[in-house]
Image (cartoon, rainbow, N blue to C red):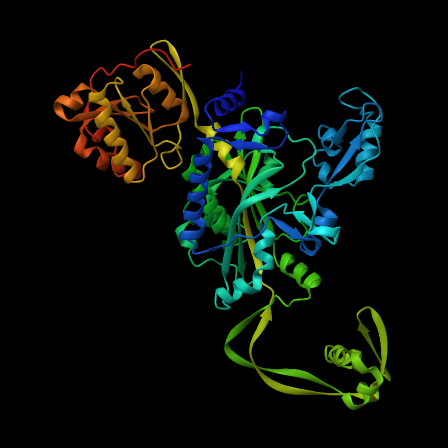
Length: 586
């Protein structure tokens, strides 16, 4: 049994992750978070909020998970959000066509459907299930479609990402931030993709949780005012050049920007914050890298893009975060479809003098001739440059219709005016986090095995910041004289906001093992010395060492341990020859 199987089995058995709909046979690509998985995931989300809402001052919004068709027309999801499929002519099984040629073509994403099919034919690739002949490659859109309201009058789609909620609320967000750049909005919520054949547990889901930030910046200035805070942070950069060499290169973020490894400070700053966030929730730095997109996989609108990848047993390197400079692509796309101006007026430090062309259509002549279209004709004329106004006939485009205007109906002159600023389309820096993948990565990287008294011990070395149970309170025996003080300790800790479990089932050794396996950092044991001397033991999950503290000091000590203000060995009197009793829990 490899690490993947062990972690998956533990997650299922102990209530972290359960396959959804098991009562009705299940469905691939859907998972439930159990009593331990849900708080683990929520705590990871809360730390994300600490980084990107509290510390950065970003605004969190919540938009509907269903969107109208125009949104996805503008975003490109209607036309471009699809996978190439092929089906077996014999057994009718359906496959991702590009996945069938990965062993032949390193980056099959860059090929057209016809090119993928040619590779399949040339290499005589048959159905993996029965060996039958495969069909020509066709597109399958990954969005879930629905209808809004009765009568099938309005098409809607379950959102494939959370980002569009920030883009379509851009005008209101701009007003909220008092019309000043830079500013940012974030959203944590569900997204949906109708994956062809989702496997690999929670790594590829049909319903998943994303945490995304859209940071709107002035394209003329991509420095970051707080870059000094991260410039000395060292990290492994798997740049395009490093990928050619075959290994990542370690350097500081300051060096990465100076050498042009990362495009600019603004992007580098959020890559650094992403790195710090992943460390904070428990992703192993030894099994993490940041990989730059290759030129043939970089989106055409992206100035630069980096993926945070983690190494998982069996699955290899998996992307869990993407951080991109998306330039002005998204806002321009929504401007084109919605016809709403999404530009931002940016004032100059000092007003400047500029020459301006003033076009003066003859409305008295245009009115009778064009009637209801006269205003639109005049606006089209005003948008022309001097070269387009030359000649006897002036050509304008009115909603796709070409119209000729006699030049005698238009006059123009160049005037000097004072300009106090200009309108720009902001660029967007987008860190996009796959919360489910991060949650599984934390479990995988925390999993550890050792042997105690000849017995195997499974441990989740979860950070106290994300552990679903922070403290287990364990009466040595289920007797009233021990239960009463134990229950009071539970109540006191819960008042202070600790996540506490109370357990009297089985021997103390079995209870220790159960809590080790679910990642509980500290066990508090109530025994007869508690009754006689007013002390309890605190047991550390990782070292299995124990210290004895006074009951009245317990809450304060645990708070200090939780915050990192106190080292475990300094928390109390060491308990000598503390024995781990019995075998691991079944």
